[in-house]
Image (cartoon, rainbow, N blue to C red; front, side, top):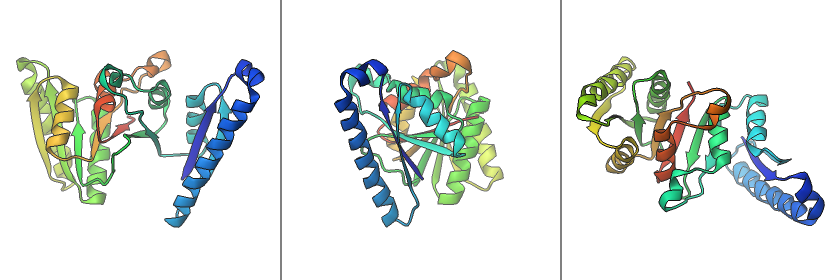
Length: 237
């Protein structure tokens, strides 16, 4: 486990108010030492890393790549109202550029993997998410639900086909999955179904865009993360 805190800085600010930078760095180190202590009590080795950076997301990505990390875990800021549609820019950039899966955990969420909701749109990115969801369900004995949302009546058959695709994938691994094809706004239907099924984890694919577009995730994934009260695992294809 690598516990990382990036203190955002810039040369002008550091020159004008150096004592504030020192305070932020000290607080970050103290917090990470408490995390390291908690990990030690659970028998887990933990490296605490504090970095000063003008581009925090890049340092996180570099650390993940250099340490061959297979999952990045970040929190959300629990915004309300319209602002919930916008994640923190650092979190969005981490997800866009990450070489591995990213787990986004809201403040009061508990990830127990008892009930997992897999959201699929039939793309190769959703196929990657399905493989991950099936693997986790197999390891944890989870109840697995698969949902595909149609925006119009004419898309219902397509949504049903998406659900059948992941159902077939699960059955090949001897994992039972309850398939759900519904009409509505995708992020709203996913959030509502997660509540109905008491899911403690939503699994979705990322769009794996390159270049500048990597800063922009699929709007459905971003909206689900912004509104979800449970953890969301974004799977990289």
